[in-house]
Length: 434
Ligand code: URA
Image (cartoon, rainbow, N blue to C red):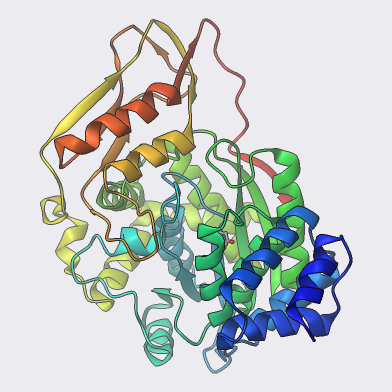
């Protein structure tokens, strides 16, 4: 089999054979396929797409590039949640302890922030000492002990995805439904879960900007998961503006803890509760969506959720006092307010541009290996739909270096739009795909 034939076939819009897809993935995994040929094929896939069959073969080949973890010795239904990526999207840190407090076993394997989107691992590591590099034995021990573990992709899980994702990031080939599907689902299938709840983001801050594209991605993810024996469902949720108020790693962790204490922003609490309830339902621990939601709300109100969070923090190596003493979290003293350019309704607070501004301040990274500054970011002080007067603060930037401010402010100058009427807004949960 020759790589050039495979590239040309996809370039011309033909369906690849299973063998061709496997040849591609094994060549990427063992390094025998040069990056330029892998990149050419990735671009052909972006432009020509893949059939559901090809997507399933790609996903399976990527799963088989590593191991499929066996969690069957751990009693209970293992359920994970995964978001396709957003700005201020910190719901995992709220819903994982809530779902675990309701009895769900939650082996949560997350990623780092890339591009304008934040990553759960970076947020967790803003707590000094928090270990995300758990071995598979440590994952199992944590599941036995507390019912939940939050970790990064281990070297044995879908190594082909690690290589492909790094290539896609630098070759303009991230935004592709089959490639995103295979990337996310290979990791999720390999981690040994029984069920998966997906949060497919839609809007300005999401990889998929329209509801139609998000629906197509959600269907592709759900179909691929179910084909592989992982019961999968998706909610399509709004990502036009940042979720909650905090954007930036330590700021987001504090907001999550506040939410677990019942003092969080309404949108973050609502989304976390809905997603945690879907996990409770998927685990068979409730008879209906309403019952599941009531269980999650009880875990929130009783403090069981925040207690579970304390156990996660202590169990994974950080000082549990951070849960109550936020002065132990990294922070910067320097602030800059971004103000409303005129009076009226805030109609747009563009999530992608806010995310890029946070990256410019150091909260995210340009390449996978860059360090992030856990302390910097932005607090959203006015949300789309709010009526403000000229000069009212919209964002409070937390920055470390003066030199980072001008590029961030340039982006934010374009992120804010005002109108005379309140804007039409998508509901938080747009629809469900099962
Ligand atoms: N998250 C992933 O893990 N992979 C993608 O391709 C996009 C988002």
